[in-house]
Length: 160
Image 1 (tube, rainbow, N blue to C red):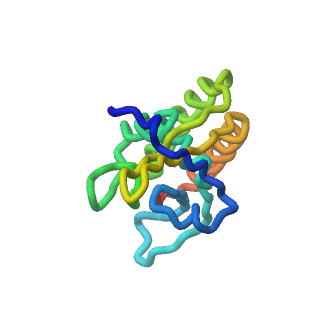
Image 2: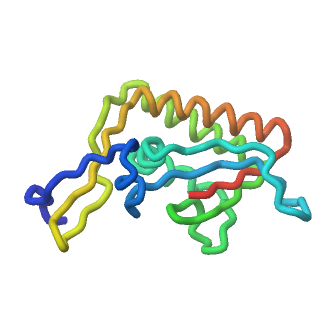
């Protein structure tokens, strides 16, 4: 990969509308659904803010979760710009993966990550600050949400 040192750094600010409109700005949702329902019904939702969305990919958690049999139209599993489903029978394993990731993050420090870049019309690179403590809190809440789905018999839908 070529050096991006000559690129102007743009730090993503969630409060700026022009940043939220960038294609590099991604967030998601996890929903409780039942794959056996005849009509699509969302029983509960959990937001994945842009900060935590980026951290899930940066720390390799999405890659680890893709060991699970996610169902998607593209067959890409759990991926950016996609919708996928995880049957209830696999949520327990997902919780184990998330708990292992949380344990590894107990020593994580805040990080600055590059989300992407453009060469034209101007050389720009897009960056985000990842606050480790905020991400750990997000993971704890996500784990609780997944445990609730497991306990109550829901499947999970990921809109990434």
